[in-house]
Length: 610
Ligand code: AGP
Image (cartoon, rainbow, N blue to C red; front, side, top):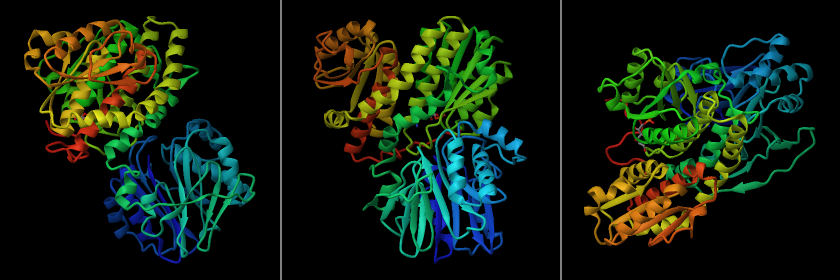
């Protein structure tokens, strides 16, 4: 996600751009920039870093007094955070900001190089800008140039553009990425989200895909790609800015849980080509993966729990041993690492000190390191031999939710790729898994989100608990570890995840009347055994919530007080809707307790110290 703002009107544009970008920093904050049109020129100032870094740069630049301009806060996807990769991107005839991913940027670059263009940045956005430029140079018509360019571009985009010769007008168009257009009677606005315009107006148009907006001081006009006039629907909202930044949700955490279907789609789609995993990294797409004899997954907290899911799926499909390690333990225990081992580091922030230290230890041992990271250009990403970026967008809540889900999705894809390289599965099976992942995971997670009301009702019965257990076997145990962490870190209820078969070896002594036990049953082959564990705790007075796969409902007589049925999906992929259910449960318990869900006590979003 990135933040886009544009303005043209009776006021100076720069203050409006900067203030708008500040309200959009939750969408992206690794670099920022503005272009202001003045005296027939398009003057651009941009910088790696936060908005404050851009403001510092602006304070030492010439005055930007023009009344039209565009601005951008970046969440890097192509090209790591740097001054040159920041937006806006300028060409001979225009300046452009972009939110989204242009998938065929390499093909576009080749076409443009053939037309005599060269490039200064690593970004897909610059390729998009110069494509529009090429068409504009021929027609000197903004609508025509945009229409021709979007016929070539594949991927997602929200563009804000100002053209030379049309400096008092801002043009906009979108596909997949959001973009709104508004007018307050004195000027017109474009923005990637509502917070940026709320100070000026609460009425706006949510631009339809493929419709070109022409924003001038006097009015808004909308055009279809063929240049014909188009109508758009005016909407009004009564949110304040904070509500708008959370998309109307009460907390970032619940907003981010609701972003999971889209985040999963964005992480999976670009990495499945001709039905098979394709990572765009020669080392991973080539023969390298077939050389590894064992894998170590090293991470902290939620990322480590994603590693447990990775272990289960890689061992299941590839039959290669996987060892999951807590990063803070890994490098101090002198781990046994061999040349033909692979070390996978997982980190949302890419700045976790323990994970970074583990990476450096593995590299010092001469072992190949692969990072799965959400923040582009972060330390773990830069120092690993290869990096696979998850495209979950910024995760603001301290409790990690959508990042965990996309980490698991990446590990599933990697497991298929490794299993293919090892000859453990054939291409038809690989295609079948990839196809099912792409078609069913976002859908099943969307269905899980619809259980919110039932989950809320169950949460009301857990609010008073002091101790609580999650139990499961096989992948359900791995899921329990994440569910337990999610609950305790935001509700402050002491919770433990236990292998269901292990309870009777001691811990069941803690189960008394009313002790809540959340039992996970999504894995068919061990469900009956887990049901035995449920009977054990039930007979000691536990309050049992069973989180059960739809296909297993009714197969066994499960003695539980409440049952949450995980939406139908291939058992191999049940992790995804199941974890959404468990994240929602933790969220509602914390919110019902009136706690600071997004910023739990004692916790930081990224633990950059040991
Ligand atoms: C997860 O909800 C926690 N906030 C924490 O466990 C986190 O997952 C851990 O600190 C690792 O962070 P990273 O993914 O940024 O490396």
